[in-house]
Length: 78
Image (cartoon, rainbow, N blue to C red; front, side, top):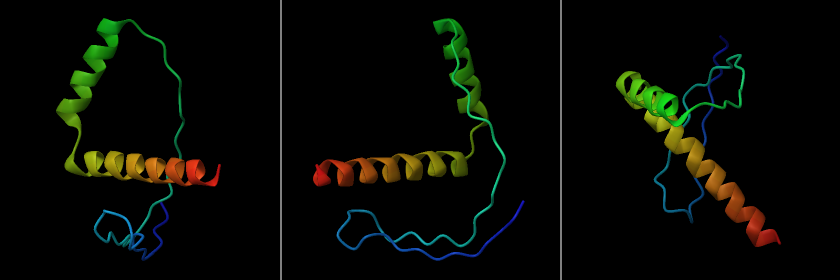
């Protein structure tokens, strides 16, 4: 895995505090679209909650925030 030091600050007009990226890692991954029964989905969600770390939740929140900000910018440009 490659680590690259990077520093970034949030938009001063946003409601988020400043977040600095101190490093990043490039990882190989495969994105899959899955179909399953509701019971199977519920079981996987339960398992995921049992093993998810605080860092996992932070990454999910940052990803969601970035997507929301990008979508808002796209809507403004329309």
